[in-house]
Image 1: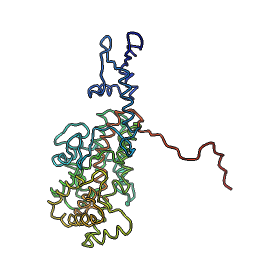
Image 2 (image 1 turned 30 degrees about the horizontal axis):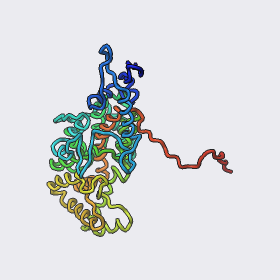
Image 3 (image 1 turned 90 degrees about the horizontal axis):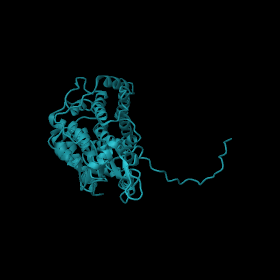
Image 4 (image 1 turned 135 degrees about the vertical axis):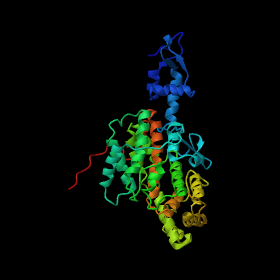
Amino acid sequence: MRDQEPGPGHPERRLSTKEAAELLGVKPETVYAYVSRGQLSSRRAPGGRGSTFAAEEVEALARRNRRESGTGTGGSGGEPAVRTRITLIEEDRFYFRGVDAVELAARHSYEEVAEWLWTGTLRLGVTFTAADPAVAVARRAVDALPEHAAPTDRLRVAAIAAAATDPLRFDLSEDAVLGTARNLIPTLVAALPPVRPTHRDEGPLAQRLWGRLSERPADEPSLRVLDTALALLVDHDLAASTLAVRVAASARAHAYAAVSAGLGVIEGPLHGAASGLAHRLLLDVLDHGDAAPVIAEELRAGRRIPGLGHRLYPGEDPRARALFALLDDIPHAAPALAAARDIEATAARHAPLHANVDLALAVLTASCAMPATAGETIFAVARTAGWIAHALEEYGERPLRMRPSGHYVGPRPPQPLPRTGP
């Protein structure tokens, strides 16, 4: 309860921790996190039990949070603004928790980068291991799908099946969600059918994923490219799928459901599926031996050239630059790499666009005997870790804050009841 009421001698109204948490729409422990970050000041309550907070200061923070949260807008474009400590993108570079993401991915495995994203701590040598019951149920569910099912269909079904094996999935505490993440990601990979009968599920996640993407045995340089691609794609600020995940987490959907929301969004050709379009374009250029006629046909049909340009990078996509540098060390990738550079140079005559990560993924998939859908699979598995990071962050915010109000533009009421048909 309030330890002071407004009135003579007591001009400052103070709130208990519980009242401050309710006003801010957060958990009590989050109130103390605000204090540690210098966003609130506290005072010991009379008797030394708990803390109190200036009501005026708490109310000001609540107003600021509402302006900066998904319920408000940020920037001149009127786009939703969501406070996050996960990824920063600026000046053609991007950072995970303040650390250069390209340098991090060059030095650490996908699993290590995921742990950094989740906890801010590097766990060297960490590997994710799936629980046998979850894998068994996920595989049975995926095996029941028709042969033409897309990789994202299989991953969504696997995520739902894995959730059904976890009776504690509604525990949204940080430790529980991290446990879910470390089990779910390898379960998704294990549920995908292997393309090599002799493939064994062991070693780093990239190695296990390789056997589900290519019949060709993995050499060390190729595995390094795949692992680096996973680490680079782990998060990219508030992409469409990530926003969907945060909306689900805002409604307190469990981690499996939040990941399922993200998987539903990436099927769009402008998001996770974009690398498949770039893969097919690359194969067309390799067949023709020249990018010019292929690009000309795309432009004639009024289609956007896949694999080029990114709205967040006026210059080069740093993820593409990093992967191209690694692909340069793989001899059998040389033809696809040359074709990609031909695409970029040819398209530049029409518009000054640089290669993005989808084109780099296409070089990897096309040169390593992977299907056109492989890039989408890599993207989905990689981004699952980022989705978990954003879900964790959202669980610490006010519930249901991702609830914008609709701007109604239909007929004004009252309208007459519609007539029934003949």
